[in-house]
Image 1 (cartoon, helix red, strand yellow):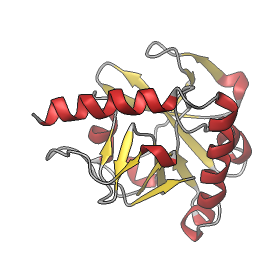
Image 2: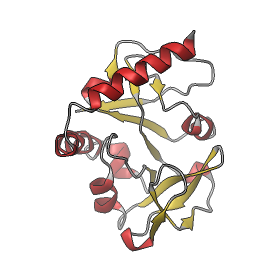
Image 3: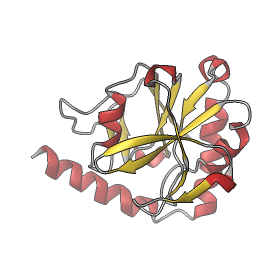
Length: 179
């Protein structure tokens, strides 16, 4: 039942995403990260985890490129059914990833998860209770369950729903930012 509901929401959001061009999504993303950059928690953070976005997600490339020289930026890489953390050192240090064809940094992040201050989390949909619906592989839920970092979901306004189904292993966000 819950899996069927999640599947229907993913299908619905996928359709909505097609109504926006990449340029429109980039403009909306700029608004989202403009808000994040105003927070004291962001300004005081030394190490943050983001993600290298796909075309249908909140666009992170500009944000990562803007901050990687003054903060340690960690990007996840899919390895089997887990996320492996890697340090972003610039575009020249990126290689084609095995999963989803997403570029990923070469250098592994060797420090403890506790050294990460803030995690920027993508999602298919979020709700008013800070629940997150991902793509269904639980990569982020497994990782987020092991960290006390501030968990920030980022999404376009049309991805913010009144309520989404959540199971016991679905990790809630501390904040959700939309355009």
